[in-house]
Image 1 (cartoon, rainbow, N blue to C red):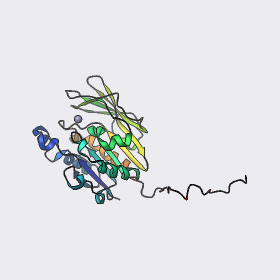
Image 2: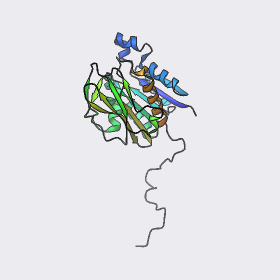
Image 3: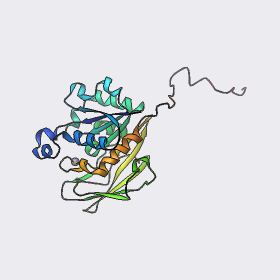
Image 4: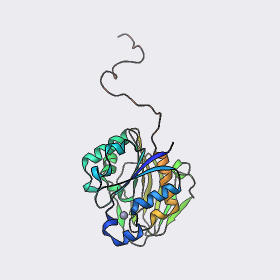
Length: 246
Ligand code: ZN
C-alpha cells in the first residue's frame, strides 16, 4: 500500500529571506519531498499555511496517513481550530512527524502538554547524531552515528515528557547535548520528533537525514486493521463475564 504523506510547511522564511530562497528554491517542503521520493514510494501532498483552511482541510486530513510538520515563525498564526482537527486525527491514528523548530508548534505542545522550551544558538556548530536505539525501525540502514556539518544548536534541558522511545541523541561542537529523535504514542497515533533542519542550512539535502524522515514516516503509519475501542455510556457497565453474587 502506498502511504499517503502530507508535508505541511508554513513556507514563510522562503518568501522573505533570500538566503533561504537560494538554498531551498522549491521550499523546505520541496527538499523534504525529494528526500522521501529518493527513499520510497509515497503519495505526497504539499500543504502550506497560506492555502485555504491553512492547507489542512478535513478532506486532506482524512486522506493522510502521516503528516510532516515544519513551522517556526508563524506558529501563532495556526488557528486553534486547525490544531484541534490535527490533534483529533493523531488520536485516531494518523502519524505525525515534527521537524526541528516544530517543537514550538501549537500541535506539538498540545500533544506533549509541556512548553517544549530548549536552549539554542545559531553559529558554526557541527551536529553529531548518535543512534541510541539501534534496533528501532527508524534506524533501519543508518550508521552508528552521523554528522550534519553546520546546524543550529539545540540544548538541554528540552521541556518535554519522557519519550516512549529515545532513538537519537545529538552532540554539538559547543559541548551541548540534546534528545533529538523521540517517539511518542498518543491515542492510536504515533509521533516522531526529529531535531535537525534549520532553514539556513542545507540539512534537508543530507542523505542520512532524508533516510531518517522516510523511515519515520513508515514507522508512524497507522495500523490498517487495528482495534478501534468503543467508548461511551452503555458499554462500560456491562461485564464480559458473570459477576459473583453479592
Ligand atoms: Zn531553527
